Image (cartoon, rainbow, N blue to C red; front, side, top):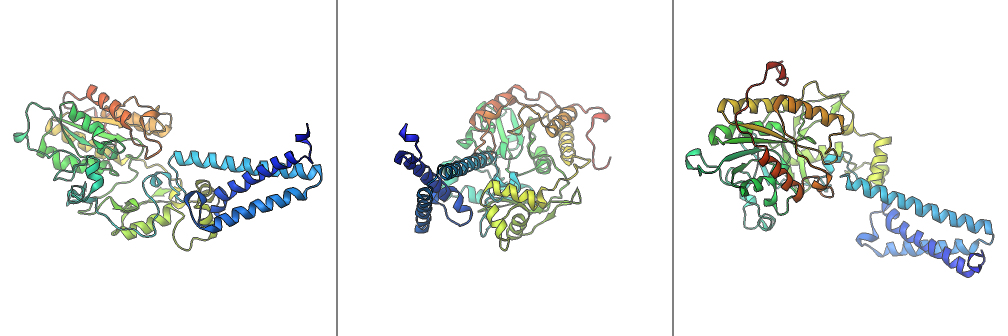
Length: 448
C-alpha cells in the first residue's frame, strides 16, 4: 500500500500529525515543569509561541530525513516521548488520588494543607482554658459566614457542632443521651450535607446526641473533654470513635491553656507543635506560639516550598513524581523512619476515660474507624492497634470497604459510609458500664 511507503505524502502527514501531538502534549504537560505557567490553567502568549516553535521544529526535522532509517528513527523518538508522557500522567494521577500533592513531602499533611506565600490565623478553631480545641461559635454562627449557613453548620455555645448541652435535670427523660468523643470523622467531615454524618443520624434515630468531635484532635483531647463534661452532663452512654489512621500518639502532649493543637489558617490546619524524628527517636513536641512560626516550621520540614530552596527543589515541587524523586536523592527530615515508641500513649488516655466512665457508672464503648486504604486490616500496624484495642477495651469494628470513603477529597467517610457506620453503632450500643478487666489486660501506663 502506498500509504506505508516512506516517501508517501500520506505517511509523512501521519508522522507530522504525531509530531504535532507530541509537541502539543509537551507544551501542555512538560514545559510547565520548567516555567511557572500552564496552558491548562491559562496564561500568557509566550506559551503559544513555544508551542508553535516546537511544531515548526518537528516539521523541519521531519522533512530533513530523506532515508528510511532516519525517518523510522524519528518516528521511534516521537513514540517514546508520547509513551513517557503517558506513563508520567498516569503515575501522577494515581499518586494524587492517594492523597499526595506536589511539593508536599508528607502525604498526610498534604491532604489538608496547601502552600501559601503568607498565612493568617482565621480563628475558626480555638482552645479554651483547659486546652480543649473547639469551634469558634462567634465565627461559625456569624450571619456573614455563608459557607456555614449554606451547609447547615450550627455550633453550640460550648464550641461543638451539637445541640446545646443541658444538665440532667433539664433533659428530655424519654431520650437516651449519648456523648460522642472523636475527631473529624465525628465532626462529620465529607458528609454532604454535614447533618448526614453518623452523629446526626443517631440523633435522627431518637437519641439525644452531644457531639464533641473536632477535626485534627487526638486521644488527649478526648480525655480532656471527658473529664470536663462527663461529670457535668452525666450522659446515658459515652461513645469514643478512634481513627486507626491518625489517633495513635507517639509521644505524650501536655495541654496548655488557650494554646491550640493546630492553627486554623487560610492554608489549612497547621500543627502548633514541632514533632520530628532525631537519631531514630521521636523528640518531645515543642509548642509554636504563633501561626507564622508554625507555618515556617511546616514549610521547612514538610514541603519543598519557601525561599532559597534552589532550582532542583523548584523543579521537583511542581509534580508529585518530582517530589518523590527529591525524597529519594535529597531525603526528608520529617519522613525519617523512627522507632515505634515502647508505649502507645493513646492507650493511657483511653484507659483514663474508661476508668472515669466506670467511676460514674456510665457505659463506655470504643468504635474503630479503619484507614480507607486498610479496611481489611492487612497492614501490620493496623492489626497491632486493633488487637490491643480489642483486648484492653472491647473495641468494635464496623464492616466498611473502600467505597465508603471519599478518596478524591480527604479520605473521610462519604454518605454511604456514614449511613453504614450509624447502623453499626445502633446495633452495638453498650448496655451497661464496663467491668474492670484483670490487671494483666490493662494497657501499659506511663508509670508502669
